[in-house]
Length: 302
Image 1 (cartoon, rainbow, N blue to C red):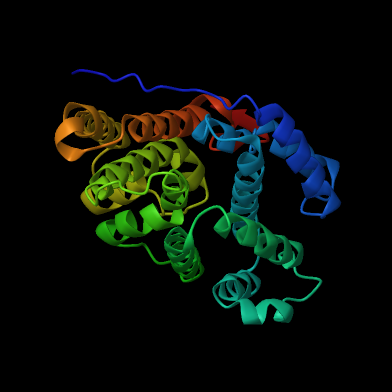
Image 2 (cartoon, rainbow, N blue to C red):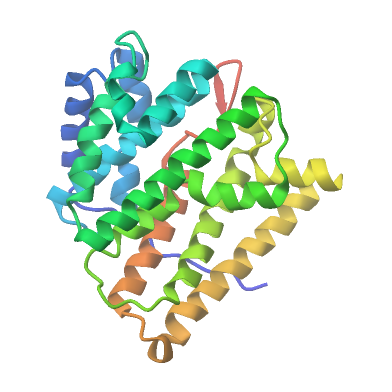
């Protein structure tokens, strides 16, 4: 079986912007103690944006890094906050008129306020059409988070196909991919095929990486766990099957972007940025952070 090497690059502005974003997170009290600060640095949360967008200018990268910091912060709070409080928070994100109903004692209070400012900065990165699409992806992201929260609260095991569709939204990958379209006005509609393959690759790869973590938490929002539950196959067989599927998807993506670039009128620059985003995302989750590792008795198991 042929294997594919993906390109990986880190934005040269990452260390400096990381320092600025960490200062901002502390000053706004998004991070409130040394343990939280240390964990964010250890997990290299802010380096995620640097790996996804290695060619982005430093001013834009700062806005994007703050945005993804907020998404990671949201993810952590949703894992450790009660259902009613978390539901109110997600409802608030979908209806900004509810912002002031969030109590100052809520763990989400600061995040709601800062995320509103960060989102305002994000939608200013593109024109009106780009902004509307970004906000549509944002609403789908929050809706998918609400769906997963509801399932966990009610101990519901999702249907596999429904999960696969929702996972593409809840991952935030479409938000990231849309950031590449700010400068490309005439990319054909067929790019949706390439984006869907990239989204599928990223979600599947992350589920493989985080399976043990979610299994220990008895959280069935993981494709491997759902396949095991619905088919009865062993974890080993499922991992082998999905890794083969990953490799096939990457091969199809490379063929789509590069072998047919003349017929499909793909921009070489955009195609390169797309592959760098994919390679950077997978590298960060596999090599650059212990975020998705399993913790047993306080020890990280890679």
